[in-house]
Length: 197
Image: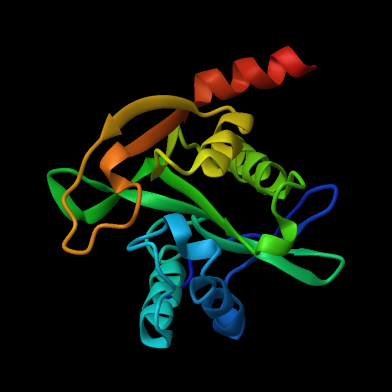
């Protein structure tokens, strides 16, 4: 697995470092937490094997396009969670990845919920995506019933783009209300940044 030039990032409170094998216990801790997983996947904690697979998938995102990947965030040396810019597979050739479109997301420890950390890390990743990596659009998805995740994406400037419904063999509670995709373009990001200055 070859990592492609992923850089560390900083905000007022967060140190965001590229995810590595040494962070395995931290990502597993999130994936096995019932509170964290309530609105993720099947709505229940992952097994350790499933959490290990997620960690490998998160690592893999840094191998396709230079600069993309997963970051783990620390505040005062304490693990807060992870944020991701995953390159999107090209529709007619899923073995190739777009340098201009990113899938955006985050997963935080409950200890740090409702303190602005999701927004703080998310805004920095979007800045990095649009300013440093040449991304033109970033999108994230969440369950409709996950009001906190939706609010965090909106606070980062993403707007509701679509509501969709998938069939799951073991559907998580609340999935009957669907899932939502949120997006932001570079143009919209530049406008929002200019508006805050």
